[in-house]
Image (cartoon, rainbow, N blue to C red; front, side, top):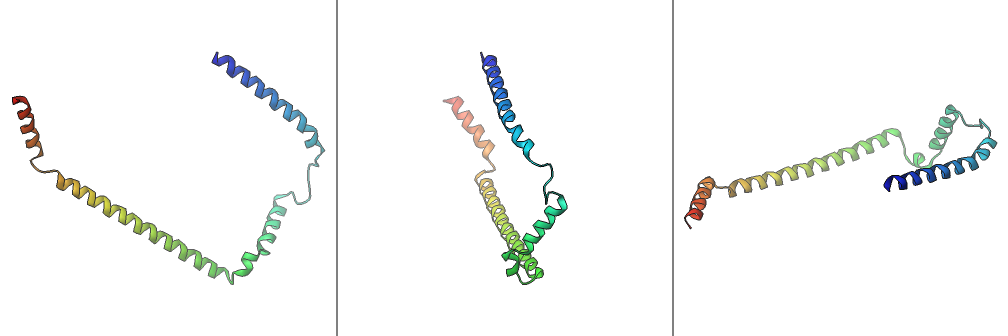
Length: 121
């Protein structure tokens, strides 16, 4: 039953895909093969012109200042992550010390005594 349902779904999807492609091929054939500004070099030149003309770059006084601010922000981020990591490590160490302190040296002896008491009762 599942195979029949899957086969019907496959055939239906293939037919609908063929219908959509058949409807769009004539529209695609109307487009010219090459347009102005279609080459990779022209795309990069247009992007470069847009970037150079952007208001964000005009607000920056020099590329050195931009680099300096980016590096300082990266340094602050790394210091924050380092601080948070050290806090996590410290809390993990405290938890492990607490667990170790809760585990007494005579733990196994107490287990044996409890087992013997249960046998006697």
